[in-house]
Length: 345
Image (cartoon, rainbow, N blue to C red):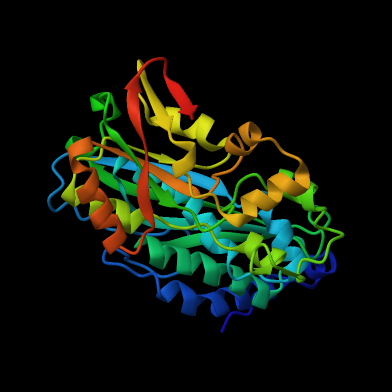
């Protein structure tokens, strides 16, 4: 039995016993994420993971870290905390898989004004679900109770992931040629980017988030809180079937910032505007906020969570594989010679 407690610390606003209870409540969720390689459970000073290098001749570790950002304000207002953990995992592992790496492990960091064990466990349940979707293990984390720094009912959430890829199998964007096909993988919504603008547009602290929206087919709050889609498994499956030259994770900065990050000098992505399957939430944001199309495509994913570049001759096969994985995938455009960047026409 753990007999660690401090009345003085509790009087200062930190209840260490609440932390112990939170750990006990989250263990059932963490257990879902255990994969081969995990050597120890939650509670130690470090997460142990045995690296299996079978079929990996030149292992390269790939790391990614990110947070959920101000999307958390929606979770506070709706008092719904079991999905933002998926966003946290997604923002890290979707970056890692862009070079062809398989995420192996994940750690989270939760800083809060007051440790309410049930709320912390709900947050971690989302993290665990994200890890399951990504096929990686939740090997540890940290919950920091920081009274006076965060309001009692608020928290911040960030994460860190490590993956591995064979050096010879890293996606090679330098091989991109004019005529290569750009394939879109549909997003699930706004994901976890641009929420400072979203919050301003809808004045979310003062609007009715639960009200039904005919344009969205559900409530605004529910739509905005939809978790970020995790693309790890379909991308890794696609890599077995076709030659992937590059992958772009469409996050903050939208098309104009993220697509060029996966292009070599002298190559330009040409996106067919008519091909983009814009989700209703983005039309609503643009209408209510009076935001022009250029700014929308430079802030949001607009319904495209990832872009994959493959040889034109393999485009049909790529679409077949991705759709078989349950993705909504379609041809978005092509690569052309020109100044590195994006043209939407």
